[in-house]
Image (cartoon, rainbow, N blue to C red; front, top):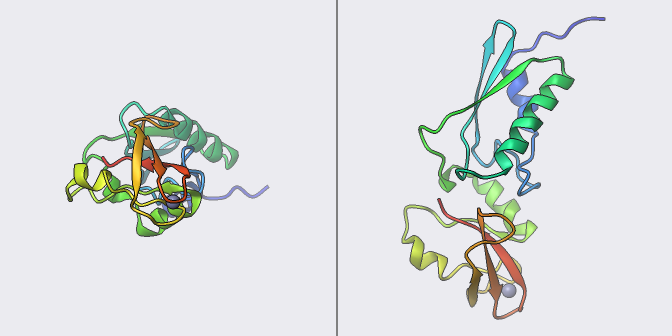
Length: 161
Ligand SMILES: [Zn+2]
């Protein structure tokens, strides 16, 4: 059996397929969590910037990374870095579009007036801005629950950070 030589690029490519457990249509690369891979003597170290502090998804992501690389015979450790801090601005525009199609309103730009913007989140279903926040917390702490007054559909908003 020929053993494959793993490179940093090749590992980054493998990792770029891992989905965010909270938003399965978006990958950890698109959401801006995957920072880097460093080759070590006995494998590699994966550098991840956690999104929301204390988000339970981080444990799942760490396990997913290790399981995937283990399948390819790569011994990996996961290192969490908090500086520079992750913000919702790290999410690519393509990922925001995917979130919308999935029914989650993507975060507004953190540079703008967040309080004002979050009072006028557009419904991902019909695009209406006649929406109202029902709960500060949706299915997870990272999301808030909204309801659209036009199409009457509830939806989740991925909070600004
Ligand atoms: Zn609507």
